[in-house]
Length: 434
Image (cartoon, rainbow, N blue to C red; front, side):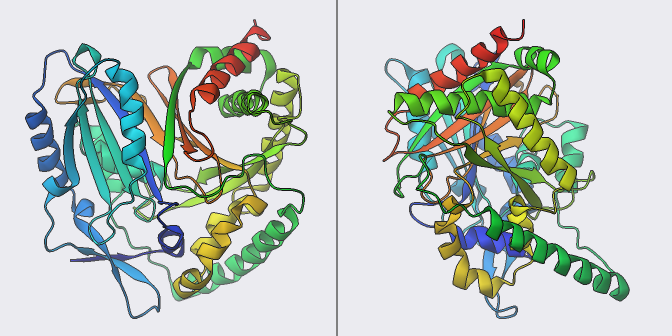
């Protein structure tokens, strides 16, 4: 059965795909069972649940009209078991080996001739724990939509079932008059976004986080206590996300110093923003974003937080459909054939606008389980943009901020220094708050 047409933004993620720039999102999810669960049972349950999700059966098929476009269609040879693998870690330091194993797995591009997703089950962790490594192409959906899909693989909860239902294809119906009004409004917005992008392009020297494209990846995982971030917020104001950005700014400053780099000017982060409706809003990518200057040049951690507050407040006041950070909105309105011709070249120039991507994936405050095993940790992973050294994703779950670091393996042979810098930056800001 034919599904929806890919949006312009969906096609853009397809066009950005390359051997050194795979455009899949990922996550490392760790479960702690009260009883041992045989790996074969885990794989069987995953296959059965995946087979019941219509969207996971669909692959990308090109269309004649619109030229360069694509549509989701059912894969006649779909077999959920092809998308699910099981690996057991052995030897010493198996928990640490999970990070290396996940990095090697995440760097492998998806086969876009098939439905663009994979799950790898990794067993052998301490205490009988096991992990899911999830991979889902960004053309399929955004981070919020990805969780709706992943939720259907977990044990049933009424709220997760509603998330899955909300994520199914829901064609938008507009009257002809409404369509005309939307077109007029979008034209003005498009001009504003494009103008803002031109003004925001930076002519100064290459970013300190620039790196040659590489097919290799390194991963790092960090957990921060949400109560510590709330203490910081209570002392200095702002949102929890502002505090997190301040922590990451301090971490990048320290990390750059460890690499022999001087933080002479701000780094700029693209902060994706979901534009989904409360009802879930379907499965297509629905994103905008903000460009936020990370004041790594400031030595004082509180001053960094205050500067981020001002920057983010100004961007939020303008709204998610204004400014250069709204480039995903503009991409969604560009015809597919234009993306086929120009998007990959534009992706090479991403460094003119931003130095890194920092995204916060929203998760519900629920007790999530798989076959009764409780979900303990979840580290999201954002695709690494062309010529970028590092991308950062975070998710708040059960009192902790779980931070997934994905780095260019050629530029960052080890993420240990950056992981340590995140922890030290959070401690530094916390000490100034109590």
